[in-house]
Length: 236
Image 1: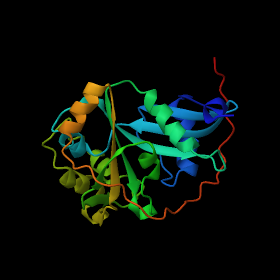
Image 2: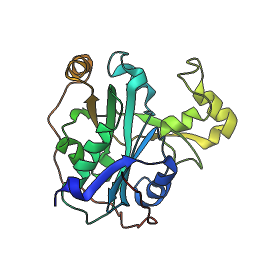
Image 3: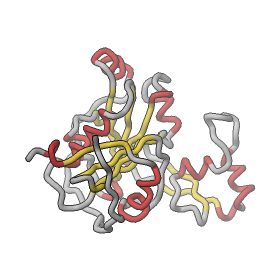
């Protein structure tokens, strides 16, 4: 029996992702979710992935010279149960992408701090554009579980007010001693261009980053043995 016969991919509610993200994904936290999809085997949910608005607002503006900002998503969570069929993860990603409305620009990252290289993106023909830039993030004591951009957004969004002095506001809100800087782990950055042939050609021409050879190395597996509560879904 083929993977297509054994597995189905469908939209799921954001709430169905929470347990997977909080306890099974290595980040152990929720994220922005605009679209969420489930991988089902025999109608049982065995994997989830989500797409949301990228937290890196500068990337959205810069990557395609200001184009596609309203059609920009990040594949920000991807997790499945262990001991599923070979190649099921690439099937899950491919089918989820097909369920998104076109055109879309998708970005995703592989965390070097977890010794990830992005083999799933390589298997599904994403464009590799190298490592994210060296960067320091502002952190607030007690909020280390948040991404640096999310920390800054606690005092306002730059896309809504570009004149905010966020660092000053953070120090006023939480106290200067509780605001500090840390080195951000660099990540492998991948893009997927979703559209018709003409749209994808145009997107690729506007991409400001050079396309590079895929990185290689030995991936380290994190503990994904947590078993979420069983959820099922009927299909037509």
